[in-house]
Image (cartoon, rainbow, N blue to C red; front, side):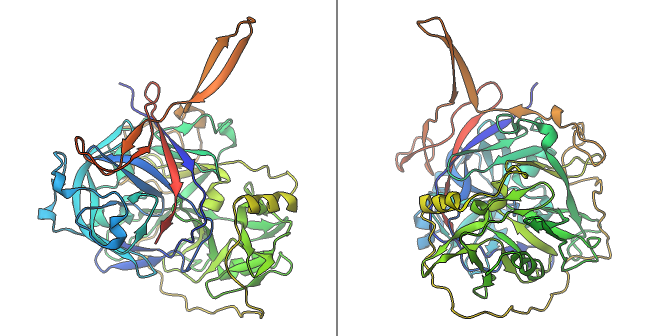
Length: 535
């Protein structure tokens, strides 16, 4: 029997509401450990990419997040003002596929660095994304929250590894959503793909890559995911924790720099970059960001959050070996009180105990098609494939293009910059969070926690057979002979039906929303939107 592949279509809705991007991971493994990603107060012109899924046959919007592993939804038991504006999982419905764990007394908690957070309990439910279904999926049922979720987003769908999951640490046989798909062999291949665009349509694929986007798989650059030592006494083996890769260099208009890792020992003197669709910005360590902006004349640090500004007419590309950020990728927008100066990515971050120096969010991920391969037990390490959209040899965008883009996005940031030079803050490097007495080996093959060994490996450290990866597409082509006898072709996308969010079958309330529809053959097409998420 054919295994399913899934194509999810993303429809993006730009907005200008600042997002609070300071985030923590809470690990319930022995002593709780807070790993800080980015300590900043606001991001601008951000987008949250979300999928419409069904939990117990009830539809919800859940934000995609490769920087976390757990799935959680706001429930009707949460009556805080932050919860009342979004569709909530109805505990009064008594879903026939809902399974209580420990009489709903196993705690679930998620915390964010701005002081917001959510809590509740862990339960199980059948979760479906189009034609891909996981029965008894463990998830967080949120009963108390002060996180401001908008755009009718009801929770988070984490796509990270089991070691990162609070739920997996507290409940037996409670792997995260994508881990279940990979470990149970549900998909054609244990991969997912993301195409994120600025203002048009993007895709999220499960078990395959989007063949309408990746025109030449030989141009995909494959990167081994970094393994980590265990946290404390969590386990006595190393393994995979983040969707993180080594970052070997960066450059500005050809001036190349070698990253300086905060913790050179554990990672063979390599800097680590976490790729996260849930982060709407780019962040790097001060020792790297300072050198990067030294290539921008008249750039300067403007606040203690690590925000830099550059002249809005800066003509430079930020690039690595194969990946290029044009000005429209890294310029956030002009300061209202200083319209000739533009806030820019990356921001600078203080040292983080997990050793992740760079956080590459949507400004980078919108410049590539990203393929996330979960790895196979005994056979294949996790890999991230990056298919660049930008031409590395093309001329730098002229200022007229940048100016037009900023105007169309209403990107002006409501702030006035200080009229004096800020000094670079100094920080104390915290102790490294992982237990290095259990060494982690780059590209190591592990025996458990990844996809079932019944898969045949296609992506390895020595060779890649990318042409054999399953492909799906969300478009179909019609060939029609017109009245003149000429053959006319037209390409269309599958139509989108309406569903109600947060309402069980047979109940009458809530508003119909446009969400994904049925696809062709074993591929399903669903439509997602991007909205605002304030945390």
